[in-house]
Image 1 (cartoon, rainbow, N blue to C red):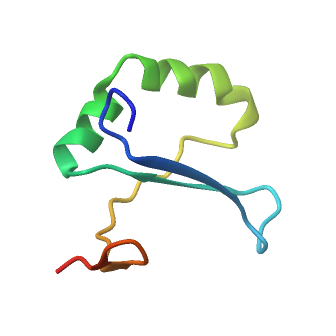
Image 2 (cartoon, rainbow, N blue to C red):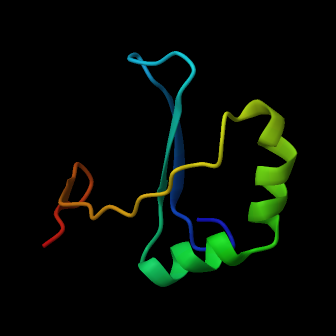
Length: 74
């Protein structure tokens, strides 16, 4: 777990679109995710990598329903 509470980051190559990168980040709760996006390092990273991106990242919050490690989450 890093200082923001992020438990994991997984970077995935898309088989459907070789130019797409899909990133999953696992936070313990919505507040930790919001804190991460509010950290000055986040926009700095986006600015630094801007030339590599076709546009701003699409961020979507999702709710885990099951995990191999923990089983059902509800």
